[in-house]
Image (cartoon, one colour):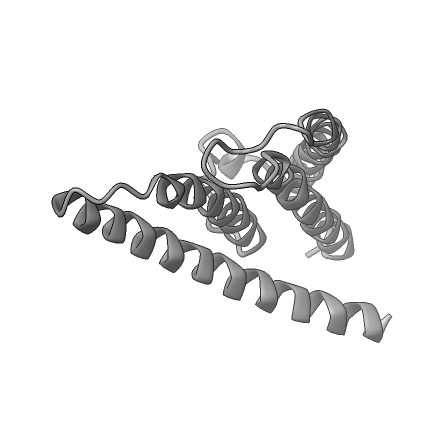
Length: 158
């Protein structure tokens, strides 16, 4: 079990690093494209690569925010309920989220497989490299959801 925890910790740190690198690369590519356009130099591949990196940084960033509890939550109804009722509702919502994430993973992978032969117009990279970012992040979110459910169950009486 400690090996899995260590792997998950390394995975989370790698995900943050990759997300940051992708975001920095997007900024650099878009800025470079704007500067080059000023000098009337067209580099169409910049925008395609920026879109690819933006998809990855967006979905990985969503997973990072979800894992750390930084997403918006609405608790106007549940905050006045007893603690046990709050925990039950929280667990039910996590199960619904998990089901939706499994759905996204399954159909996202299917879509990526179907689109494997399509490539960008300016770079010889399959469009599936963009499409696979969503199921990858959803799978990571599903693992985070399982850990959140486990935590809620473990701390149910607190």
